[in-house]
Length: 392
Image 1: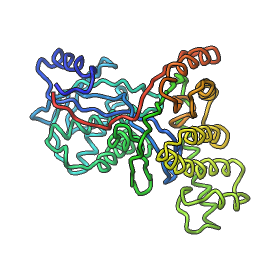
Image 2 (image 1 turned 135 degrees about the horizontal axis):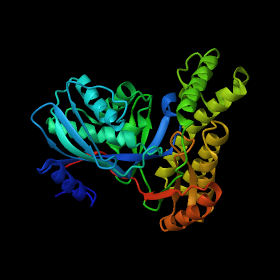
Image 3 (image 1 turned 90 degrees about the vertical axis):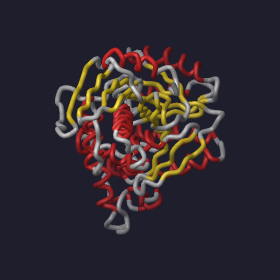
């Protein structure tokens, strides 16, 4: 068996127990952490994520009809549906990501066949590490493999199909980054993505660095409404700036100098929102240049600056995230740390020297629970490989 680690074998055994036959494939969709470039994607900007070593796996066997039978290990529940009769399910929410993926692939004109499958994920849910995109991408790979069409869509096309599933079937207005990195991640590489053109470029992730991710486990109840509000604030900023900068379509077309020159047009709040996005796009480009030169001190400085901008200008940090980031930064060997994801909870990420991971985890476990009364989770990772299918 060509499974990439010891996560697949227990799922094979579960499949045999549930379906009384042997599975033939495992489809794998990784989660992601964004190194820098937050709230830039819906402003046509730049992002720099890496794929995680944590993923969603679907151990499966193709069927010769249109029926899909899935068992979720973590939820301990079944969901069955027919590919010709897809309908949003109000009670089993995870089912909408797999149904949405089937809907989106069929909307692309592909003829699918059903599968039997066992789903398991170790990407923490509701943490800002994109468990939803991991599930969508794993399901896409499973369905395409079952129907003998794995090579029909290239990486960007598959990512766009997964985004469409989330936007139009699930009803979450996400950008393209999560699906893109889940599909196109490469081991020991970050992925620089232009969210307007979808051009992308691999950027070497340095051998002399690792990532420590701290999960605040704090509620993200504000995230949805505040996310939509931030989008509106950015769009209103663009509309006002177009009066004096007629060529611009989005904040990615505005430089820091132009924004400062015309700040009087904007309310203080809208100005701060725009200042974050414009500055963040510039920080992403500077981070790519610093990574290519293996200048980790500069990458860390830019990550720190990103967090301060998200905290004070975009106002999407939280007390929990700030405490987590401060705990990470308190340890020698931490180059820099910032919140990652939409904010209001979820995770922070630190770029660290190899060997410093345990000391940073210890500092988090010592300081964070005292300040918040919440026990966090800590994960260590490097840039990992993207979605794939392995034969069992």
